[in-house]
Length: 74
Image 1 (cartoon, rainbow, N blue to C red):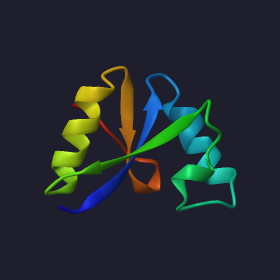
Image 2 (cartoon, rainbow, N blue to C red):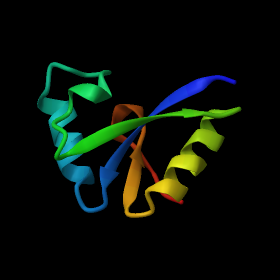
Image 3 (cartoon, one colour):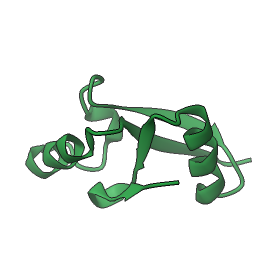
């Protein structure tokens, strides 16, 4: 089964996440974000959608952050 790395941000910090990636030279590497701002989780799943659902169930107080600063709400 494939593994997906999913970036999660504590609710309310989405704007800080976007600002970090706009001003940072580390674009594309979610692990480069400060740990107090965001973290990543590796999940085995059949699809990206299933990985997102799994992480949202595990961390209901967080927002899934997608590439480009977009976020996914349940």
